[in-house]
Length: 196
Image (cartoon, rainbow, N blue to C red):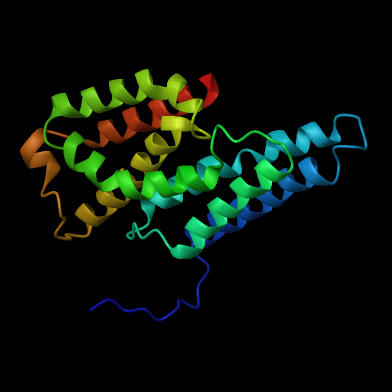
């Protein structure tokens, strides 16, 4: 049974979450409060604030749960309604829909890509090919999934080092996956992030 007691220590994950929240607040402040002021302040807030999203995607992958809460679904739908009321864009769907989709498909995609080295490369290639089309229907498209896969791979690597029994078995024995594959996922995520 897992120990659900809160740790008295501040971890790296706590710092990442705090950093992501601060950047997200900066992004929203730039959009809602500083947009009418003029100058570059609003744009810089938006540019810096957008760096929070890859952190959230990484944390989704790194987390052990893939639950899609009712609050998340209602919030995504509420934002969609707000966009319709104000005449803003509906597509691409807001980032909360991206989070929902990523949480739903992350484990099946991991099961597929970790069957063999060929499936690993096929998955990466497919995510690259689907990036541009997916950006039209969901914010961040397949880029969010790639970053979440990287977070899940980091968690998986740490679990293997700690001797945990994993749901997809020992990848290195079965497929020859190595820490280099983690670096490949990271590099692919960076390329897609800057290309998008």
